[in-house]
Amino acid sequence: MGPGSGSQGLGAGGFHLKPKRRRVATENAITKVNPMEPKRALFHCNYCQKDISNVVRIKCAVCAETDLCVECFSVGVEPHPHLACHAYHVIDNLSFPLFTMDWGADEELLLLEAIEMYGLGNWTEVSEHVGTKTKLQCHAHYFDHYVNSATTPLPDMSKVLGKDYVKGEVKEE
Image (cartoon, rainbow, N blue to C red):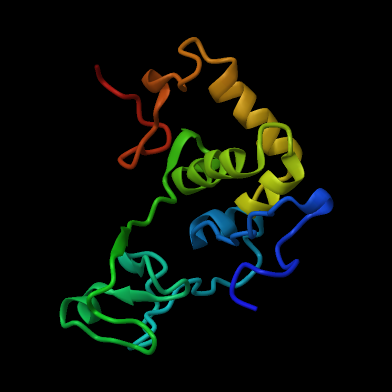
């Protein structure tokens, strides 16, 4: 039997199911949920083991769980099974607020990705994918900022807080 034969990955009715991808929002987003919990590194360089949770990191597009710090990537390290010739993604720390103070840009991306993967209305799966919000929070945020926006189907970009937002500071136009 070769790959793809057999009943693995088949749901009810013989349909192929997409595998669940588990992603986690950045450390800052998680500490917003429970500030009493000690801070912990969510991402380590697979080669030098340095904490790369709050800095730019390189994620291999081929090896599912390979993250490298910029220094190790720049000298071409190859922690097994990763190869330096693999395609990669540059991942930036996106824990800054985008539309509201309680939702980071990373959580916004996870929300939209989850809705695309699991469909609008499957809020339990969506909230599990976001990882830091309940299904009610995901539903309310999506409808408040995407569906009921004056610029639907896009959010109102005039209300973006952004990476340089300082709480209490008024933007000058």
